[in-house]
Length: 228
Image: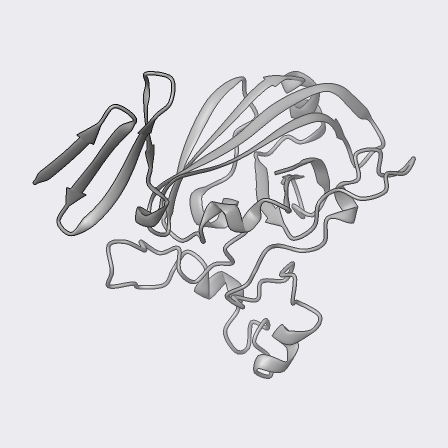
């Protein structure tokens, strides 16, 4: 390993890959985007709205992600308020997804704007029922692509026999289908972590949103959301 250093920073050459470590305040800071590491996403959720029309204003949750390698990220979800109220309204755990749009105009029946965020981010055309392309491109890919008689999404997402350890059974999913890739969010206080092995660079999602869904019966109700 060769190491070149100056007062303003260091240049490390590791196996032919150069990383710039800048120091502007006495604390080194690595710029690692070329390795698919270090990019981050964050969203702060404030409030939830139930299918029965109950506004849970004290619900609080944060959703964070940091890249850990090419195509990989560590997600951390922390719920800090409104747990008992959400449990009462949603007896099951929560589905969660990256939706393609940021929050738009709110209304009396959609006070947090969660229904303005479009479908799941699906630039790889995995074509689940809530894909951003579900009513357009996915229909033209192949007859019955979303139907049980051909190749249902449930048979592709989370079940693909990938030979690569880098993509353990996530590569059949929509990039934005976080719950199918990594599991549902438990309704409890505290932090929960998830390992994503099939994700694009996180800065791809800076103008999207995260949506939490009640998952009691049909898992479609958009309970809470926030912009990334």
